[in-house]
Figure 1 (tube, rainbow, N blue to C red):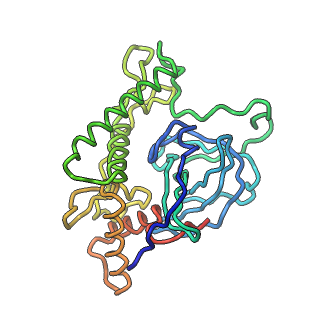
Figure 2 (cartoon, rainbow, N blue to C red):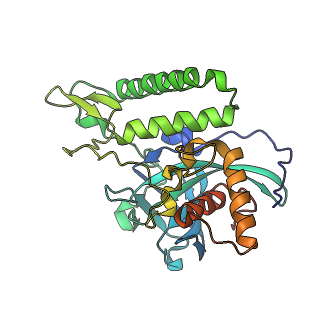
Figure 3 (spheres, one colour):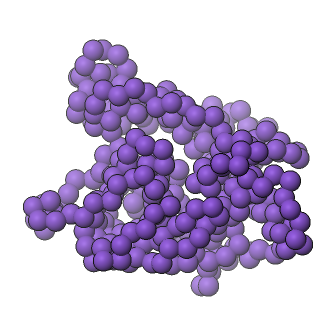
Length: 303
């Protein structure tokens, strides 16, 4: 199977991510804006996806709603998208790249799990023209003790720089490209975040306030193991955690092997499908297929 080669593109400068204080692959708590476009639901592996476009105070951003359907009557309305503590309740900021009809495209998107909440903003809840809403915050540091927003931001930045340095040092002799190294840094950071290892300040009782403590006393999020490739319940939304079951990359997760290896795996999967062969690892094949859809490894986005 042949894939399109990247065409020359203008320099990409992210806007939404820096405004929200997040990088590729990181989660946000909430975002609000006007739904200026809602598209039809389409099948994506074992799940569904519905694309939309949200006009926020920071600019326009494309949104992918997974496993749910947003009523088209909300088009033109202001909505607030809220993350929840449920499984698949995340709102994840992503930077997607693909070859479009007019050349190579790099753009910011938001991936919304099917257990996130979407609320219409009406009446007094809508922001006034003279006083735009404040940026959505990932954490509520105002409930910490003696720890300001600036100090919390500096704490997160320092820890992220440490993770960046450690990961790059660990893979220094591998000669990986910048894109692969960045994906490894994101994978390690997200893993530490989910394991409640990221500290943002000090709680009222003096103990460390970690990244998962969103302004209320909660038990730390359970760190969950990567999805096994043989698990038939593998959710395509978690393809990055699927473990490669065989071959030279055996034991690694799809989220850490880089786009070049994902493209090769998708090529093998698609070729086998065209030849009518049954995959040895069906659930893993679905994860590879979903990764190719998410990363647009072989086609245009359906917007």
